[in-house]
Structure formats: C-alpha cells, structure tokens
Amino acid sequence: MLTLYPAIDIRGGRAVRLLRGDYDHETGYDADPADAARRWVDGGAAIVHVVDLDGARAGKPENLEVVERIAAAVDVPIQVGGGLRDAAGVGAVFAAGAARAVLGTSAQRDPALLGSLADEHGDRIVASVDARGGRVAVEGWEQPTETPVEDAIRDLGGRGVGRFVYTPVEVDGTLEGPGIDGLGPVLDACDETGAELIYSGGVGTLDDLVRLSELAARPLGGVIVGRALYERRFTVAEALEALAGNERND
Image (cartoon, rainbow, N blue to C red; front, side, top):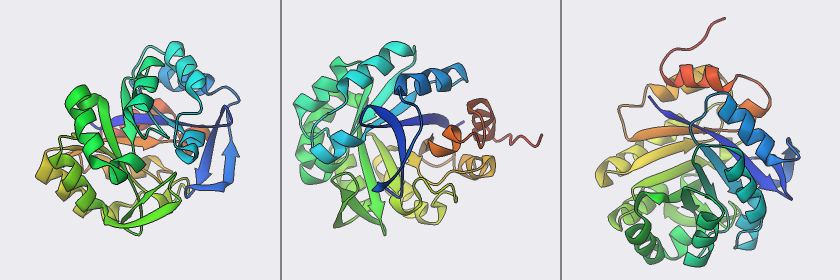
C-alpha cells in the first residue's frame, strides 16, 4: 500500500497552495498550519509533508517556528522541505522536530553535499526533483535547468540518496490528474538505484489515487496530496482506502 502524505505548504505563516508552482497564484487555507496537521492526523495520516515556500525563495528556512508548532501538534513524523541549502538548514529543521529533511535546489547545485548528508543522516535525507517539461526546476520551482529528472535521480542515488520526491510542476495544484505519462522513466531511474519515489502533483479524485496505487509494484512508495484534501474532494480516510486499491463509490 502506498503511503499518503497530506501536504502543508507554508507562506507567510499560513497554509496555502500554489497553482503550478506560481507564487502569484496562491490560495489560502488554514491561518494556523498546525490546525491542518491535526486534521490530517485525526483522519488517519501516518506522516505529514511540509514545505516552507518562503524558505524555498529565500534559500534558508523562514518558518521554523511554524514547523516546530506542527511537530508539537501531532504524534506522527513530519518531513520538511523548502530553503534547505546547507547542513545548518537541515540541522535547524531537525531541531524544530522534523523526522526528514527534503532538499531540492541544493540537490542539483551541490550533489556532493547531498551525498555527505545522506552518509550522516541516512534515510532522513530526501531529495526533491521538481520538474518542468521533464527537466529539473530549482529555486522554488522558478528556475529551469537542462538536467533530465531521471539523470538527477541516477546521480543522487549513486551518492547514497535513497528517497526522492518528484513533482511535475505543470500539474501541481490543478486537481486535473497526476502526470502518470511521464512517470515511467523516473521510476526506471529509481529502479536502477534502489531508491523509493514519492509522487506529488495534480491529484484531484479518488480515481487518481487508485491509478497511482496500481504502480505500487514499482519503486513508488507514497503520494503527496494537498489541495484536494483542503477542498474536501475526499477525506484522508477515503484517500487511504483508495491507495490500498479500494476506491469508495458511496
């Protein structure tokens, strides 16, 4: 069964969602992101995914107090990304209560750093490979690179990174369905390195989750869901059933 990762994206201290990674297209939800975390965990979530959007732009964590509040509010692990560009940033989110640290821009700009952090912290280090047009995007999804996602995974997997978050930014926040067509090469690269993939982006219905659950025999280990939960397209409990291959029809 795939793991559900309810998402909490933080900007200005609030829980928000962006459309296709565009900071000019933001929808606000919970004034206190800890309220969202409690809601997801009360519904059955076993882990929560947190992104510091301000940090992603600034290049350093900007919402550590909110991360600390979320970690204190729930009794499940949280994984945190956004602005983690060095060992100090990683240490700061761990000190705030994060179980895992997700690094994106630094994973591409300084892969040796990721390798050393993976050596030190093991599977607490996760690499994020956000993509536009199949190429890695960095700096809060705003700067494209020429690196194919699968090449980035092979490189970082060879350096000891064992878990990746993959987001095709074109579908992120749209509720129009996941980018399954582009998943094949990404999963192949994870196969080659023995890494696990966590998919994020575009999930809008329980059927989307069922489709992703059918890939569970591959290295796909989890799915991040944000806007669909906030807008009550389905509940956490229903999502967990769908990821187990049992779509609700009532």
